[in-house]
Image (cartoon, rainbow, N blue to C red; front, side, top):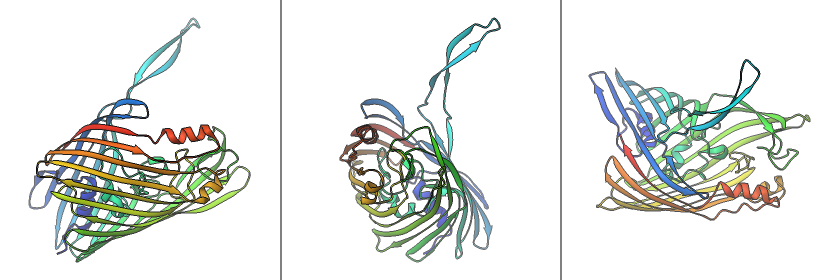
Length: 404
């Protein structure tokens, strides 16, 4: 049976992968809830051991019953920098007598950042409409593997442009997005438009094929204009345990070089996924998604990948004693067009992940996760190859996550 808040219910599942929201107020018309998690970990990778924030966040959900099947709702989610990131900056002070004193001061980055923020209107029959920064329709296709605490989402086309939040092309937490959702029995769908236009400078050797240099530099050689993006997804609950998903996201950009040369390309990704079971329920959980993409993501040197295919997979088993071992395999491999654009370079991001979660209770989890890297970033330019390889490495992390 179709539920009232089709869109907000789906979005809530994707934001917090456990039913941990706390209802703090409710009357005949209004309801307010708070959710999120606090996560910190110790991680060893890329030759260093450090304390790291585990994407900690807090979210506030508001719902108002407008009568006759209509509801309005809003959600705000803030990212929290749990572990801090203070740095020492050098400063120079010139005194009245002309002498100069060199010193240092401590600066900290922002403790709070915006992850999500949208408002919406929903009806039992007519579906829902949301406006703001929200998970893209593409995320419906691939969220099923984005459940590992430390390493995930880097081959599904979600966190694009060198592992950012997917806001530029709308596949992750899209900015300035208008989205419509509805459901009919076991079938649901989403369509969206991201109504934003971005422009940024293009550096020599950076981002696009066809530039005059092979390595990134400080020389500005042109500009890039990124137009509106559009996305759609479909979800089918085939059985009680099996969910099938499919979707597409598309946009266009123009690169204009100082030489007068211009490049117009289409950012395209499409794919499908399948999920068996529920990650937080007892027993077996399995998920896989595949995608084909064109000019959708960048390599580890911020150069656009002309064509690639990607896959993410995850399997776990939640025992009655709270232990949940898991294993996953991810790959994003560029096609021959990538090598033709970048002097024969090879890009294959590929890794195996394993982990053990201890779900102490519904709101507390201890975890140990490891990654074994099998990537191939072959290049005739050994400095570039080393830079590509540095950002992909073996690693191990141990942490604790406290759901609100």
